Length: 393
Image (cartoon, rainbow, N blue to C red; front, side, top):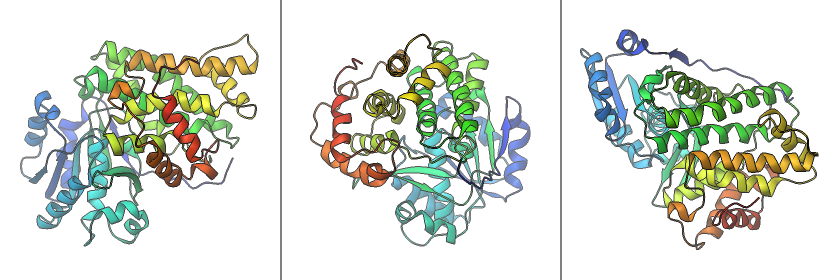
């Protein structure tokens, strides 16, 4: 286990009854000027938009609507301008990970005089300036952004999709599982796939951290059990609650403490989203079993076999058979959630961008040197190409 320092000051308010009784006071403690950041039509259709506005009466509310999935730098730029013009005291993000990601960068950009894209390319700049407090109301269990320091922002003009970390996690996060009841089945499935990918990225690690491994295995089993239930029974509170808390726990820093955390699938998927603007969780579902197939070798076989035993309850075979079974089980579970399990299924029908995507992924993720299994540009192209066809492991 590696040395580590861990601190996460996010105040979690989990359950059904917190927003109506606590949201106003939480925001008012930070000031009167609130920037309300949200996405498209979903919170208006569900009634959450009107509910939140009703709770904010007496505060000065400025709205930034239209934050898209794979949040774009244009939204951050617009939020920066609003924050400066209206002397915003606190940012309230109502939505999923994309909205919260954008809100966190806006909170830093409020104190920055240059282009916010600088803060994405050079996250260290964010530690030299202040950051507005962020309060969030989570509506989709997926990214864990509600309790971590990171954001992923896209710049479609380049195209690039980059991660950036700031000095603070959200100040307060309201996690009400009932707010995810109206999430469509496709997005629920993509969210579960995203959670599972976050766990895989931290599990397949060259560091011997037994505490981390055991926690991740438990969270994986939770997502495997409750993800399909949430898809089929959208108003099943236990399914929604377990999925929501698993998403938060998967990426709030706890299970990653003391590990190497050299992620591979996310850098590969970020290029898919940057070039084609596909749903992040579905891209991860497509890539994960293909990466696993690439990563399985004599050195990684013992961990894949452990994965088979501890996560998929597979026994009675030698380690290589168990490892291969674990990859097949992973693929089949992901496919049970996501019918779109090849790149052509999401509209990517040719490989014309694969070389550029591979080059960018290997560079940004330092995959040739830091990955669990080193990935060269040629390897990355192979993983993309394998994702063009049905999985036949």
